[in-house]
Image 1 (cartoon, one colour):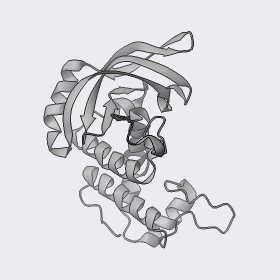
Image 2: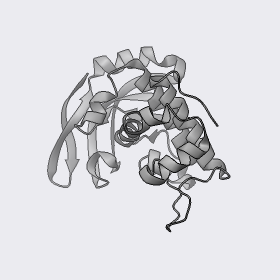
Image 3: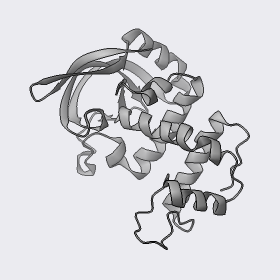
Image 4: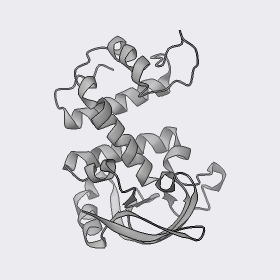
Length: 208
């Protein structure tokens, strides 16, 4: 589904990554309307994002989805295995939207390009950092999915997370906890992650 896309300009350098064609963008729009996708269009934008290692760049005329009348999802990604994996199976896009919903509520500066809360009323659409969402989804499904699908308790997850840091509390120190179940945001993040893992591994226990 992904094709080479070279209408990316960073300074004087033209970059090439991958994007969904406008025809396939239309198919995705029709397929995921029930999840909140309202329309699709071609869009140009600029800003610093995961796509270009957080260096400012301009993207010209890329196919994009309009989501929940508030977010524009440019279907452009790094040329990488996590990007290719996004379209391997239908459940992955379900996971993409699940992750996006959580990110825009809890960490909008990570999920949205050049997000500024003070400009909420001025912005027509916030542009989603699609490349980052695809990367984080791959990290959850492929890097953590199998072990998490076998856990039965928060304690098991906390011990595993202390090593692999899927959820990072930001605390530093040998005896600090990498996951704090008394922290509402971390608990919410774990719930979201388990729901995503369950899309791939249906027998996953939702232990929170």
